[in-house]
Length: 258
Image (cartoon, rainbow, N blue to C red):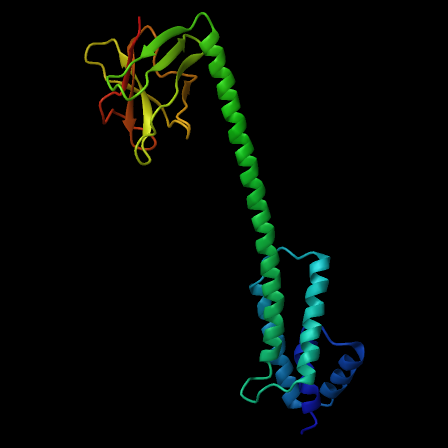
């Protein structure tokens, strides 16, 4: 065994800053004597550690996590001193293993933090959507109970489909509601149209929604695209998801105004 072999196993831990003071002093003394093999191995180990700076994100782990990682690296370095690596494996690779452990643990910590942030955002979105539905229900209730709202029965020629009821308040908007409404096929939706009084006028597209899983249907249009005076009827058709600019199917429900 050459004079440098006894120090070779300390080089990777030295590059990571994981040596005890006594071991560090002994290795530095040996390097000062001009051992070419150990100096070359140290350069390789330092280069490997330097590349980690380009892999890791800018954020830093907590002090607790850093302490745990360093203890793991020291444990690995200690194990490397007591077990001789196979001759076919380059010695600097043991330093790479320690560095990989550090990077993997850090990445797992970052992933965990990201997942927590996504879960929190999703929860806030659910709360916001639920609150929106509550406000729409309250606003629709105001329109439906206001004596100034005009009641518009919306009937259908299909006996298997229940009728709907629309209420139009000149200032607050339109509400169309019903129960036991069949779910549109696939991802299709139910869209409201305003049929103008103008002869040959094009139906004006409005909001599109789907009934809920229990068949409850409630469509609120707080700002109708046309006035009640200029509209002769309301109609609802089944359209592709997101709605259409022009009707693509025959109306399922129609309600005449006045």
